[in-house]
Image (tube, rainbow, N blue to C red):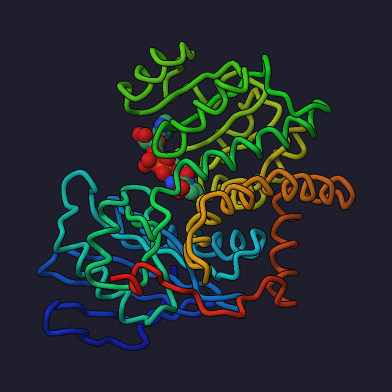
Length: 378
Ligand code: NAD
């Protein structure tokens, strides 16, 4: 990854924070953030703010190298731009990664130092939870910055997981409708990879819809817990992607659709919540050529974004409004499938074109600045 150091500054006396601005083509701002005392090395990437301030989660992950973290955050930030544009929330795309093992190195000091860096951006980047970072962690980040959403309090929207799961479930229904002419999941087989904040709720939604569910997680205890609750079938983490099923729902990490896996898939569609499922955009074409319908991740997994965005509306957070917005994912995804059928391009390309159109013409651009109700009430 080619980057150029633009500027280096020590930010505050309280935190021994150093922020280095990297010049990355196609991105508005990319910052490397280091606080050696707090053990923090992080990257904040702001891809595009044409429609509003950048909003995106904090991922805490033990990346093997800085370049691997940079590559991930750049892809994730760009995905957030597309996701926000298609969801029409009036936000731009951004993301942050903290290079750390969330089980071992996630200290309050580290989270506070990260929050101080977010505060420096004065609202250009608004953060929330993501993989390796829970709402309790976000609560600590909040002590150092006001630019936080998804806090566990009455003024905030809390855990986005159940909303992402519901949006993904509605997207799976739309996918079934496109494939089978009915959106009933009764008797359909859905394989879910990853049983975290989102996957667990998705399995529950699928159970109540009458689907046959196959689950897998690297953590066998999570899989066994769901198996005993819903009597779902467990597959091993190495087998789940090749499970014979109607719909495969990747709900773990990104890049699961790659040269190794796509040829071995035994599903009719891929529709899950994981970000950046395609290793490369070209894998969407391979899926299409194999006759596998692909639900673009940034369209189907927008439920959590829609929920946290609702918190920043002037009138305050209303879960019923969020629910109405999340239910719209069904129609948005159906439109993407229809456009792809008409143009012959992949569903991923159709969704990217839709996002770029909205960005170019300012469709859904934010006119009112976001309101941080948790600050007003404090
Ligand atoms: P999580 O960290 O709570 O759960 C991820 C789960 O996947 C963990 O249980 C982990 O053990 C499992 N896992 C990891 N690698 C695996 C593998 N190879 N095989 C099987 N299981 C594996 O994360 P989450 O919040 O549930 O998010 C899941 C995905 O959805 C992520 O890609 C995230 O970026 C994306 N996403 C989440 C939200 C949200 O609201 N949380 C919103 C949009 C997108």
